[in-house]
Amino acid sequence: MAAARDQAARILRSEPDSAENDTAREAPAAIADSIRAQLSDDTTSRRAAELPERPAVAKPAAPAVSAKPAAAKSGKRKFVLMGVAILLALAATTYGVYWVLVGRFHVSTDDAYVRANNTLLGARVSGHIAAIFPRDNSIVHTGEAVFKIDDGDYRIAVDAARSRIETQQATIDRIGRQIVAQESAVEQAKAQLASA
Image 1 (cartoon, one colour):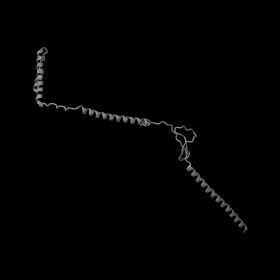
Image 2: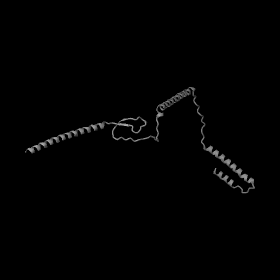
Image 3: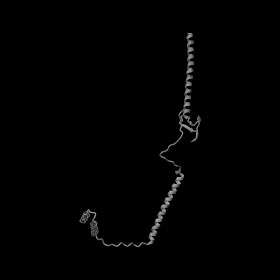
Image 4: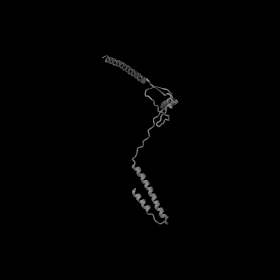
């Protein structure tokens, strides 16, 4: 095969350089065509010779299939498809009811801002809050009471202060009586001094 290619290449290369001789040009072209045809014949015959012979095998006959199993199979398929369709419809209905009752009221976001007027409130005294007077989202004006502070701790403190005052007053009264007693003792000592 390689020799045939070399020969075709030599024939094509050995073309005459003169443009006047048309027959000289056609002759090598005809030879090249014949060599190409011979090469293609050699190639196909070699390929056929290289391939092993295969025994002729007849296709197996398809078994006879009755129409009843096909009908039963399509019946099962319809049953399964109907079941899947019913499950999908049930899931869609469940989701729809959930959305109507709950989902449409639920708002969620990862990037949210809340605009509100915030005011800091401070009390003159500290304590626990007993009551909140304004309702939600109501307007509060200056001077209105907003919270009531539990006064239990302050009542206890007032009672303790009153008892301390009473104790101090009792001490003052006792000291006052001691002064009167001491004055009478001084008068008695002066009288004894004058009589002696």
